[in-house]
Amino acid sequence: MKVFTIRAAAYMHEQDCPYDEEFDGNDFCAAHILAEVNGEPAGCIRVRFFGDFVKIERLAVRHEFRGDGLAIRLARAAMDYARKKGFRRGYGHASRALIPFWTRLGYTAIPGRPSFIFSGIEYFEMVGDLDPPSEVVAIGLPPHILIRPEGAWDEPGPLDRSAGRGVDAAASRELRQASA
Image 1 (spheres, rainbow, N blue to C red):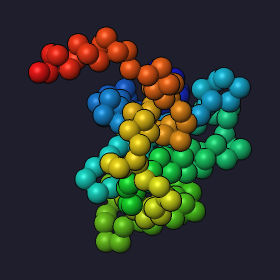
Image 2: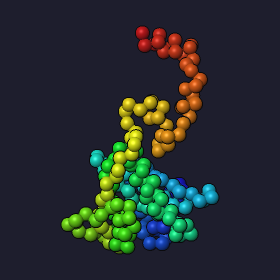
Image 3: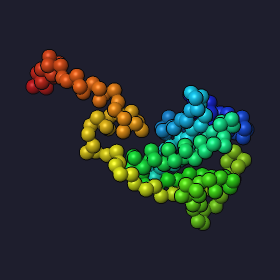
Image 4: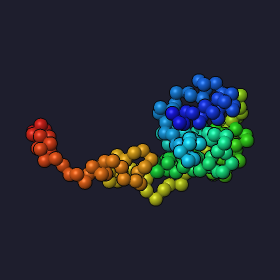
């Protein structure tokens, strides 16, 4: 809900974007990164995953939290998140005014591709290479890493703590008998 509130303020209120264009149905098949300042929702970015690339989109920072680098930190967090999942290519759309922002992050406009317009704003397709991290989330890592909360693979999760309790002998025996 916090992500939607931020985007409604930034896009619907400030840019007069219609609801059905901002909330396009892709939010429930995407990952969202939320930035808070002193517990207050301040900015967000959406990440969608495709075959061999990740689409970084819907970057929004509330007006009162702009000017301190939050947008670039959110974009970098999205790129780092995609890298950890094994993606090596990023794709997105940038208005003319934001091309320098994305260029600083290593993105370039795709040569030969025409600009396009939605919600009354001209956009350009941008693409960037994502450097691989030292360790990608992949099969072969310890199982507890792969069941940790999404994006928090470096931090012990609730199931890490449960591993210390061991196996309930009676439940284990019942499972063995049921499978026999």
